[in-house]
Length: 345
Ligand code: SF4
Ligand code: SF4
Image (cartoon, rainbow, N blue to C red):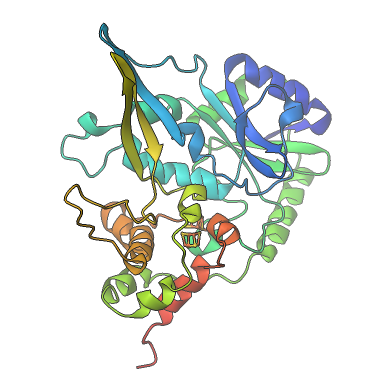
């Protein structure tokens, strides 16, 4: 482990920017999101969960895949430097691993290489992820339900703990080890600081609500697929789609061509399973025309279908959907309701 004093933070970020395009939490008005920074002054290290998740760095809300004219096709130029993401929290670093299973590894597909997404891979494969420990988790955080935690390091290259006067760095991946070895502006960590980290971890974990045992969630969701519980759960939902847009793991998209005359572009845009026309077919038939069916799809995808395909829940307990839902449909309550459904019989 090594540390940099807070007074050296600006210099650290400046050095990082020499070799990387640096993204970090930036507050604009009331909302905080991950944006490419100009200098360390842009960074907000105080905010815990950004309103929008960092998935948009790798999988933007709208992305031009290529442009075309009568002369041919051209893929837009990308950033020349690799990405470094400063200030990601554990729920978000874990979400990148989940999305990489879909876009980067194409696990499900028979000829995987054909289906690996080059737009995702060129950004994600070379990026350096700094995971900043959460010293004071929010009341909406429930990462512990999914075996995450405020000081969990999964999915990061470098794990960082903020103390009163310093940032303490620990290499997690080989990429992280190489970065820290090459880092010149650092000093070694002392036993005293290690004790300080242990204390911070203990305090952070005490902020989280009790861990729910979700080991039966996969089987339970399968059992109740056709039960009336979904009407009860969906009653509050107005299908606005906000939960899916802020979620770090939701990844539905649509592809659209925008052209005029001899030129145009093909764009990939986020979509949401909560929208009524998401599954509307050209014939007019819609297999998920009712809100209940769409709410069930969202929950089943997170806690059953993704498990079936990848052996992981498609949720990291970040709590963003809890915060943003205009009707207070709390996914934690949904999970509890499902786990307890018909248990008394
Ligand atoms: S479903 Fe909600 S709590 Fe889970 S990862 Fe998505 S936004 Fe976070
Ligand atoms: S944010 Fe709430 S109301 Fe909107 S689609 Fe999600 S669950 Fe439904």
